[in-house]
Length: 121
Length: 110
Image 1 (tube, rainbow over the protein chains, first blue to last red):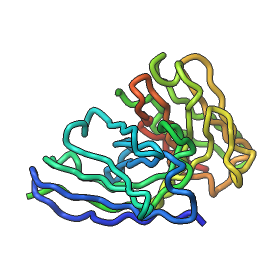
Image 2 (spheres, one colour):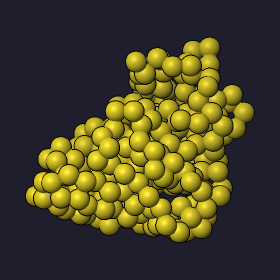
Image 3 (cartoon, one colour):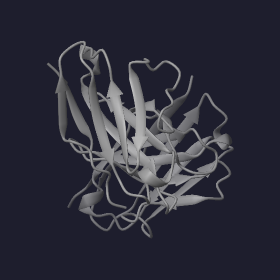
């Protein structure tokens, strides 16, 4: 059974940093693209970032490029999102998701339950 | 990376069929076959319903179908059931190697 468990969310001040983690199990972690998708409560989904199965390809939304860094550790089957220079508009539930593809983000067939990030003073 | 355009809401009666549109540009929906649809119930994580325009993951009812014409993709749900009431979002791969979502559509089963 595929399981994705996010952690690391919380309250952070504007300009601060936070690192999200996503522990994966039930599939060959290095064989699939992994993504982060966020959602402001009551609003739509926003794709944030993705990383290829090998880790050699990384992709970012313009809204987070230069501030967020995605990475993965296949030895731990864990996905990360390092978030720096956080802004109020980054406040959202952050989901970790497994993609169907191995190289580029296309469609996400498994999702975690999400972790809430709140950026506020 | 402008969001894809979806109607804010659609509704239908049990047993009826409804269609949700998802309009983009030639840089996303029109340019690739990587259009997906997600169902999301309140307080829950999204669930993949359709991928690559027309394909259903294992376990998804065949009442759900997808199509595309030009820059617009569509999700059709036939034989509406009460449990179909949820938010539906489309997504597409783009020319900048990113994904873009639609704003989401709230489906109400009357």
